[in-house]
Length: 347
Image (cartoon, rainbow, N blue to C red):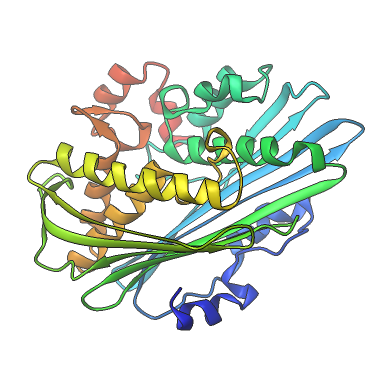
């Protein structure tokens, strides 16, 4: 790992909250804590974490994420915080999306609508891997919720036998513009002593890619990507590839193949099963999103409007919106998300 970044990361201010943060303080810390960027040229950050407390066999879980993007000389900060209470059989007794949620796409990212989806699909259901599909964007209509909930479930599965009183994880990922390169730096820790650090660098990216008018990457011409990692449990990893593609589909497929290798390598490195390793910024869908967003922010000079186009392009499949936040008008919302109403926009 780059020694400058490694020494900076040793400062705990790189994490948004500390280990053992009281559960009733987490939401306030996540939404209000100041963060320390590794450099003035950072593009975006993704903070995430999970805290689990167990009492008389029942579980209280706070799962959270905070995305930050530097746009037009200001930082746009978007928290997603979900609290769950499980009984002794891990049945979800109640689930709540914190009112601080404002999405990433404006009014249609409605907290009230997404709260209804959480209640409808998850309350009364087991919080287990057998039911992980209902924690997806297909049912919840929000990628942030998918990342937060599947990450929390994975962390619980990894540590269930050691959850006597409480356990937590914290992670920070940051993309930095280094002139000709973009470097993504990520550090993970849990309260049981596991630590993991990785970097992904996009080398000499300028003039090697072209975005379309709707935010999708239309072309990449031989972009070199290097990935490296170190862990408290395993040997270091070093991977690299060259991405080339002339359609969005080929580009995403190439990125997916490489990020899958990175993700599988990290799972082996910290000695966890891939099926329980959703709790990482290196999960392929999440990492591809961070790569594409960071490229777009830098190439288009931190332009807010184009950043929105990039997010929208990432969350459409053959023109169909997967996330409620990217609908273009109320008619489209009601076509693909029939339980959405105008009241959700203004509530």
